[in-house]
Image (cartoon, rainbow, N blue to C red):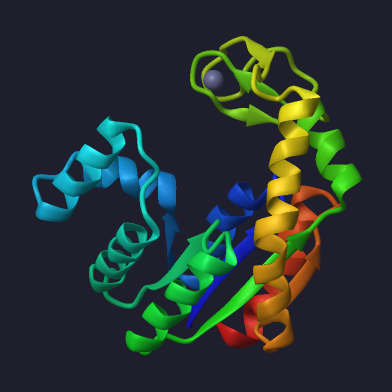
Length: 211
Ligand SMILES: [Zn+2]
């Protein structure tokens, strides 16, 4: 069984994906990371990705699907996939569902649900390490990075307007995907407005029957 993880910006999805991957023996697919990795490869797909990135164009959905297909075929023995942040639009979802069906893969979805207000609040108050780019939530009290000791600063692209745009894009493009999986009985939902530990606990409880 594969898992597709959803969550609005600020939901802590990235943090949870690491825990859930360990718990359920899943290999994380995160589009950005896969693109960066492939661009370093000599393979045909790697070179294709590299030239798209260098041209500054968005990676077309067809190529993203090719990358997912490649990822599925190279999963380590005994591991299933955790898709983090994909599909993010109805357009992607159609091709994604078709691909998973063709590959005979079953999946469940998990949504770490937070309200728009909570997302706004969290995103405007989070900080970023200048050195290693680790992200820290508002409640992290120290002035320096836990991992590398670097100085923390507010993200330059975390202006209220930019955040508003990211949230609106999520509501407009990704929420319909969530609603669709929900209507098909594939969606598990947890309350994301709790401590990281409690969200992890609830998420593990939710997925446990299937993994
Ligand atoms: Zn750091």
